[in-house]
Structure formats: C-alpha cells, structure tokens
Length: 146
Image 1 (spheres, rainbow, N blue to C red):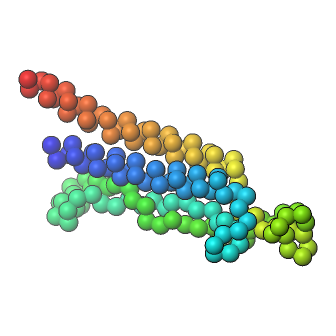
Image 2: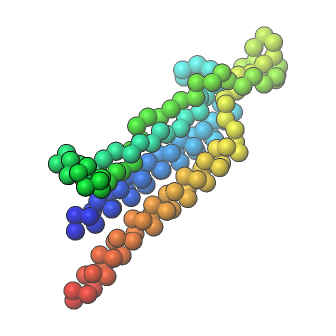
Image 3: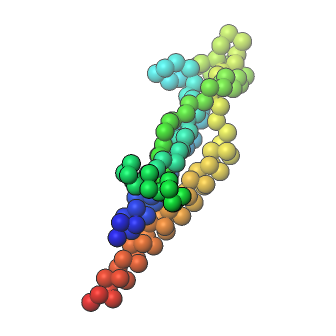
C-alpha cells in the first residue's frame, strides 16, 4: 500500500510543477508587449527550473541507495528570470520610446512560448493518466474483496 501512495505523490508533484510552469508561460504570453513594470523597464520572461528530489524518509533513502531503487519526485527549485537585454524596437510614437525612438520590449518569442505551453500541457496530461492508473487499480482491488 505504501508504494501506492508513493506513486500518487510522485505524480502529484509533477502535476504541481507543470501547473506552475503553465502559469508562468501564461504570464509570459500575457506580458509580451509590457514595457513598464514596477521594477522598471520591460517585463522579464520567467521559467520554472525543475529538479528531481528524493522521495521518502532518510532511512528509506539510505536503504534505496543500497538497492539502487531510489524514487524521486519533481520539485520547482527556482523561478528563473530572463537576464538578456530587452529587444529594441523602433517606434517613435510609443509612450516609452527613448530619445532615438526605440522602445525596450520583453524578450518573449510567442512561438517558443506556445510550444512550451503545449509541452507543459502534454506533460500535465501524462501525469494525470499516471495519477489515475494506481487509483483505478486500487478500486479494482476493493471490488475483488467484496
């Protein structure tokens, strides 16, 4: 029964991470034309950085190391902000144009963001399926016991 809950925990950690990634990608798409932020300057693209972290107690981890069967779950360890210089677009009529007529725009490529959103959606769907599989197995096991 313990492995049942571990599989649910692994899948739910991936669902949480992918949901955060989709929220960040949505924010990137929504702010692709934002030239003013509270920090000053254009919006900076954000992305989630994932890491595999051990699942279980320190004793379980030590035992798993000996048997080479360590389980890992996904965790968002950082939300990375773009550090590149903003794109400069010539638009002298824009309210945020500099003296030369250039506007600092976010470094957001719509096509890249949409592809990343599709990948995050597919990963979310796959983890939903992985989450539902042990749940369905447990329900079948309960039906057998009746």
